[in-house]
Image 1 (cartoon, helix red, strand yellow):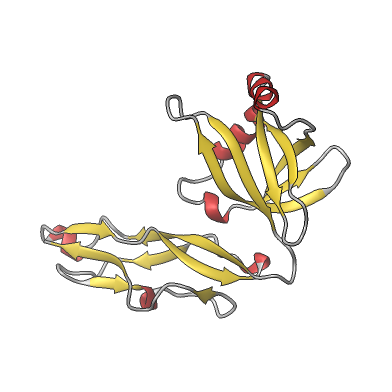
Image 2 (cartoon, rainbow, N blue to C red):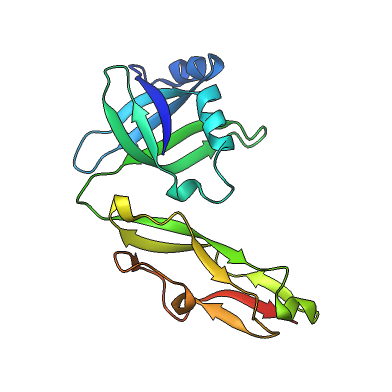
Length: 186
């Protein structure tokens, strides 16, 4: 879990938000089930430092502990990040709050183990990652950080499917069991 601090913002006008961005803040919205959305800001430097500590592709399962100026703490996941198209700077972040006792849907990244030792690749095939994430429904405490798929024994024209992934019992997979996760193509 990564700690970040947020401050409440009063203004919502375009000019006010631009001034916040110039001052080094990122506007955010925190959505909670059945409650009004919390509007605030986080420090650009703090959030970008947090992003550097997250492995590529693992943002969807990374929990943040967000603390505001009043001392209120919320466990949140990133729902969406908006980037400036020309510079790829973060211009807005949407979070959603995790509540104990309420299941959530999340995309869990899939890692492919032993790709360099894959039999099919050694025979001249190409390893194709068909699914990079698998959507699941579970309690916030049971969110897997990732799923591992061992591709060492895959030959040419062989595949691994969703049913071949080891999924914990307290996690409901929303993907179809016959969906192909990885394949070795000629």
